[in-house]
Amino acid sequence: MINYLTGEAGSRTVAFIGILLAFAATCLTMHKCMNLLPKDHGRDFAVDGKKSAGKPRGAGFLFVLVFIAAALLFARPARETVIYLILVGAAMLTGFLDDCAKTPWGEYKKGILDLIIAVMTAVTFLNFNSSEVVFLLTGKTIVLPSILFGILAVVLVWVSINVTNCSDGVDGLSGTLTIITLATIYLVDTLAAGEREDGFSYLILLFCVCILGYLWYNATPSRLLMGDAGSRAMGLFISIAVLKTGSPFLYIPVALVLILDGGLGLIKVSLLRFLKIRILTKVRTPLHDQARKVWEWSNTQTVFRFAIIQIMLCAAVIYIAMP
Image (cartoon, rainbow, N blue to C red; front, side, top):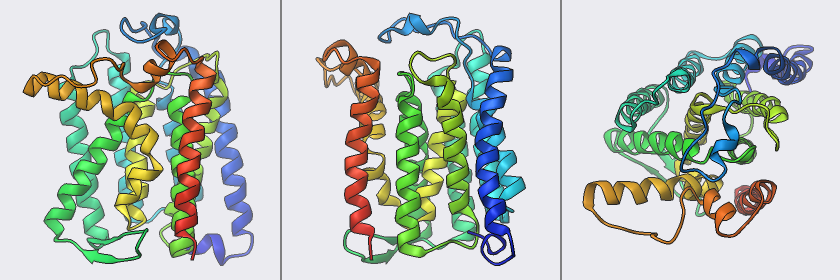
């Protein structure tokens, strides 16, 4: 964390209060403002998609704004971190405008906007950090050419935004998986590098408690939905957090359930649309629809079992990261 959180008298108390206030402010904002959000129209092709019709959606607009405000008030972010906060806000806003639209935005439009944000994120990271990559399993470090690192960073950010977005379809699922992923990144980074001076580690905790405030109202049966405003911002923040560890390939194990749940559908549709190749013809995607429709898991079972798998993977990663 930044120096003021560790050196000045009472600074850790301020940080502690900041976390509590971020959670309380998220809960209060959700309670007071949920009826101002656009209403969900239901989804024709998703399992139980019609059950979400009429619920407020776009709650990501609220908890991301609370997160940004808490970060500015309690984290004293460095210039690099301020840029990331702006980008997270931009990802949230593009998603929220889609949530508010009477006709959903096209896939290409959203994909291009995600690509622009991904490029800006990669450029920002390289401007303030090296292109060094640490492999957690072996401890080996290599330095990639900046252009190659930038291209891989763009891919990471774009993928993270979209798989997280696609995994949002069961009450509490994407938010729970995001918290597990971010908490693991925080622990691994703290074990490997200690407390960072730029304050980003503290931002991870703030983001997690803001998601928890949202989950208070999204637990089955949900009262509101995060929409693209929340899922896109969460995906972006995950990618930034993993880049800041210096071990970008850490993303694969700590977000594997998100990758499989949301990513298989992207691959399936892309191969069919552009190459006319059919795969996974007997598997429903996202995988959470396969779990509920074919395996007959309840929503609660789906969330718990997906979370259990991810926690197991993260426990192994944390053990590897221990000095």
